[in-house]
Image (cartoon, rainbow, N blue to C red; front, side, top):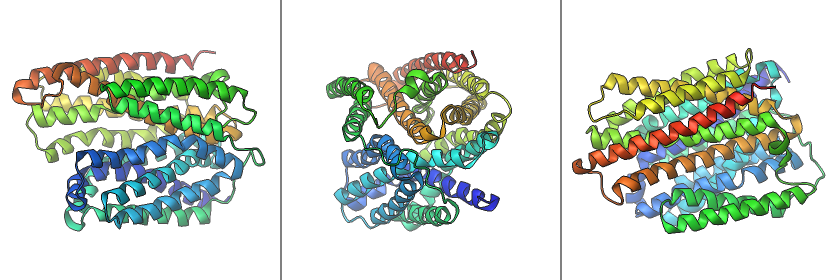
Length: 454
């Protein structure tokens, strides 16, 4: 493949990586307008969000396996094309149910992208360039998170919420065109093998129960779902070890030490950081009295720092051991979370911004090298599985993070609204949650540093 086409392929995958975080963060600002136009209440709006996230998590591993069987390029193109089509249909939604259905189908399409995109990107570039390329791709994700609220607010204000879906349709259509031109190989290392339908069903059931269980904490139904998820996980592992052609080769986790520790480190990192923006948004608006706009301007500092640091960290990971950088990044995240444990109602804005910057720098230094470590620890035949595992670890970590934050708030506030009289209780829950996140990161530091041992 020529350099020009390799660059175009990188741009195409970067565009598809941009889509999901962009539409997720931009739609947050459009939810009130969507609710008014389609007569949706808080429950149906949250159902719309879950309708996307659940299929995206449940079908990543089966989609990666389909890529191994029929060609990763083919599955990737179906995913990006589906994202374009269902985004267009979402912009034309005529009812709440139609929008929920189209978002669920968009989630399935995203799973097909996530299950193959990182594998294709890894296969396109040699080992000595991989960290740089993955770092740029990670920076694109953070850029989408940083700019999503800005552009989402502008599009919603001037053109209406449907314009967000139209913009995503245009971006994904561009990614399809670039991919058709630049990506030629199929990478179907398992062509001819049967598809594991039973394992895929158990995998989807396990993730459905676990993610829903974490998101519903501390309601009684959440514990039932989590227990069901654990039972499904045992059944899945038992079946996959007996299956000749499993949807997920568990030997990667059992016998590949670098892959196992890198996956654990990624899940811990997302578990400890994903809910921080949610908690700090509540802190700024309820405790410090800022409006949503000014709170957003402050919180955007973290993804901006991540965007700037990620490409550098990815490039560094081509020269030094990626685990070293990932461990340093996890340590910086731990320091930032420990600093957040000491937030008060009068913490200086300079100190608050410094902690956000430290959190963003730590996550940026951790993420790209860790993904490089995951993708470089497996052979070409396992690129699809490694790509899907990376995405699944992120989604499970995010769900776990929200579950911990929700439990912390419930412990001190119950179902009470955050009023001035409840500020002290909220601050106690914030400090406790950040302390738990910091403790998780200490485990993550150990897992990350253990990869340096022979």
